[in-house]
Length: 152
Image (cartoon, rainbow, N blue to C red; front, side):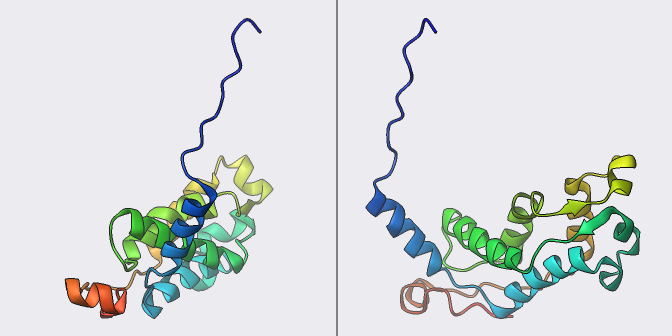
């Protein structure tokens, strides 16, 4: 009560924010990387089919299919922050805990066993196979193809 109220200073203008969002949408995502994101999401919905039967009692509701969109969008932004014009499976792996943890609904059995959403996501990520992607991007290809030279 005895201090002045802090004032937030804008870091970006609305135009700059929109430009960053548009740039992130231009980051290339190979089909194999999208498939990886889909398989991660599917593993939370049907853990037994993903060779994770021990997780089935702990998951009341897996993440929705829309979580795949969140994984891809966050992976694009992370790739851009890492100064790439293409997404690698590592980007999906790195953003998955933050994208999935709040979307996962655990069962009462999980709560009783002290199993957390972070534990479930870590177990899924340790089991779901990531594709091998080799970046073969040259500077000319980067400007012309926006990363479309990524090989699977």
